[in-house]
Image (cartoon, rainbow over all chains, first blue to last red):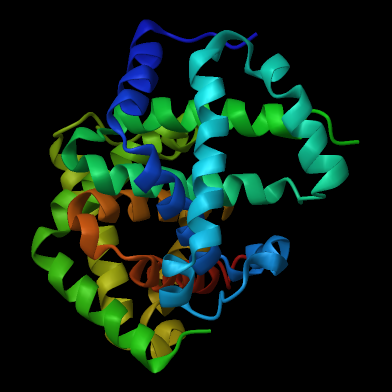
Length: 147
Length: 141
């Protein structure tokens, strides 16, 4: 079981209470599709992903970004048992969506950078480390049902 | 692969960061030590506590080297030749750590540049730092 310090718990709850889900989700996903273009392979039905401008203004990307961040909220609300909460999501990504789990790290990195950009100096090295630990647990839970 | 536009963008950004090299460098290092404690093992000979003189001077060295490389990316192998030797024969830092520092450098830039750290700038700098790390480890074996 993951052990969270009081600081880590408080930090995660604090960050997710402050960010605008409607902005952060789409920003992280579009950044991922722009910075790591090979991730576009999973979004064939999304229409125009031709360049950065197209990706940023693509409504399907925006909508999906919100879906992803809503999924993260589940983990935020159940930090002590993310593995169990994410069982079905893990099966979905492995069996149905067939996403290479290495991609989870790419999206996690983009999410970190988007939140850092929002928070500026408040995203201290300690806050940053807590956030990365949280995302590492999320990613590990998503990988769990792959075989 | 870096386009002409990207090389120009990279050059401009690192030029702007040169005057604050100490702050950028030490911030990136601190983030790396906090998120990836294993990286601290390479610094047992220095004082890497927040605000320490060692941290600033070391961070400055790293950022200035990255900025120097950015002035003419096509000449990276020439510019980095002495650093290649240093890392291969003396420092022998496992190259996976270069990725960790690069990531933390990107986070530092996101905090420092805010909205200006657009996805396009992010992509360009990520590619540049990957190339930089690859050149740095060329003499390892």
